[in-house]
Image (cartoon, rainbow, N blue to C red; front, side, top):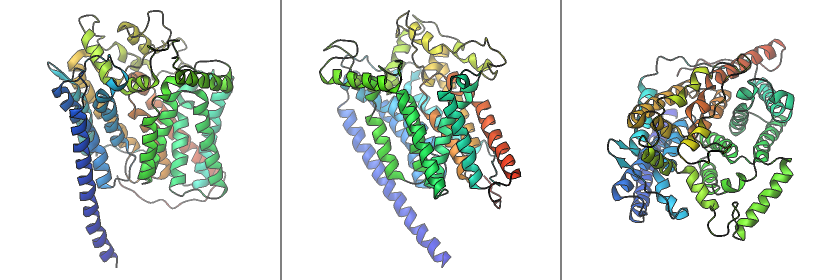
Length: 480
């Protein structure tokens, strides 16, 4: 009976795989042809072909993930989709919202934009598959039972809420390095447990309540990036639970919501709490409806769609940087990576540790911000490699970044892990797929964050087990 079922599944899966492959290839070819023939003047035929090649390369991890039916977090596919949106599709969309957009230089002597994307994804795949088999994977043994897991997650949620709303906690040195990003981990872990059916009854109600509170906290800030990152964690959990249709719908909503960034960016820094921000947001939206932009103009102001498209279009920013470097702006020679040397030192130990100001310096250095501006401009990883070391920096730097991402994937996303471990990996990895800020900001404190998380669950499980909470579970030996 079992042999017959296995044979039936084996016959059904190749047929489904071939169907998925055929549909994906056909859709890609049709959409690619349409984009090529409707390309804007700002991108040459060669540039359009390279942009489409970026899309194809970026889509391959998602296709392989579906065909192989991998039971892991879709981290590699998400990294590929980032390349698709920010470097592949964006040149074809930019002119729709920005009539005077600068030309997109996809080919410039020894450098092409596609090379960085290819090197990152190829090195990620090769290193993860062939070079890290020797690396041991940290595990969290849930001997105390699922009740203890829920209690530990709720304890983290309370600490996260205290950091958000209790001034004394938020002022503690280094507290934000753990209690701010841990919100994504709590959200991801609880959602995975719910989707996998590990929580029932009152535990399910409690988990849903915590999820709603965490989502409300992000919405209350009117910080579009934080909301988007939380949504990415949700999409990753849905894909991991094989809810592909719901995940695709949510991903579409994320893409369509990009124009909202223009509205939220006008109100998120206001004082006065949620109600004042909400009132200002409605006023801003009404102004756009009547033709008045946030800069007070009626015709020439930046449109919400333009801001949204610019937000994901790293190509125009890359082209701007290449045009100015090094003739007008000298290369930084690794200056933006220096904070990595001191990021591991807690501010409690070194109160006068220099602040991270790379975003502000980048914007002013390349004439993208006023000299007196107090704001900052995101410096994506790809562009950061160029502003430091030029073309060689992109070719070598993006390959090293691919190796780094593969290492994280091996440690946090090994097959056969339990739901809590996958939830932790999801909350750490998915925010790293949107590589929109400089490297040291996004990963400088990552090692100690991961270490503290594992110590918390290991120590918490030990304490709860000693207190007799939860039923011991039989451990199974799982190999990666």
